[in-house]
Amino acid sequence: MATGTPATALLAHEKVPHALHPYEHDPRTDGYGEEAAEALGVAPRRLFKTLIAAVDGRLVCAVVPVAGRLDLKALAAAVGGRRAAMAGRPGAADLRDICADLGVRASDVMTTPFSVESTDIDGLLVIRMKQITDDRGTVRELFRTSAFADAGVTVGPWLQVNATESRQGAIRGLHGEAMTKLVAIVHGEALGAYVDVRPTSSSRGKVVTVPLVKGTQVLVPAGVCNGLQSVSPGVSQYLYCFDAEWVPGMSGVAVNPMDPDLGIVWPLPVDVEDRAQLSAKDAGLPMLRDVLG
Image (cartoon, rainbow, N blue to C red; front, side):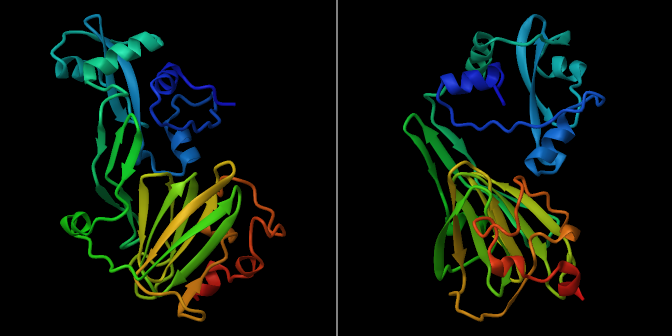
């Protein structure tokens, strides 16, 4: 069971929203970065770690790529010091002092800016919503036309919006209807999975997974198969925005989410005979090789 660290204890004490994601560490390896990235289902280049160092006796927090190493000489120069060394395991009081130096307090208004990140699938974008957090909680911008336009992304108008509630372990997908989707988790957590089966796409056959937490959206182009597994205890709620109204029999392609050729590591075990985890319709979908031809 994950018990956390002094840093997460401080976050809990200050009532800062956060989540613990435990993973197994192989003691034969030097670093934890790749293992953590694999457990979260993200590329190591998208994950960062915080390290505490002592520069001329003063504790400093450094943020570096999760698979990288901290250059102590460069750190010392960056903060105007002469000598840096890795600090021992800091206590909550030390971390509180570091956060105070950074101007980070639970009572501050914290703003997360809107951002857009491309993926290995052409046109599939990971969106970080603009978020504003204060002592009352968090406001998230689910959609702002001007923010997408400023990022060079043309979407909408949205003609249908659905909210899907899924039990822990349930899988939905992989469905690729002829419409663009903007999807997001609004309660709980899930793993999103996306497969490009478009006949003329430069990334045809590519598979991308994205951890879905509150504040993260995925823009799914028309014809790219979309699916998820709900991983949080209880239920998760998944919001879909469509640029076309769904109708029975609309054109599109679907792929079996349990196809081993996809290489998708679903976080929770799946019993394909359990209809609370996988519908009969999705269990009977074709394999990727049959779809690609």
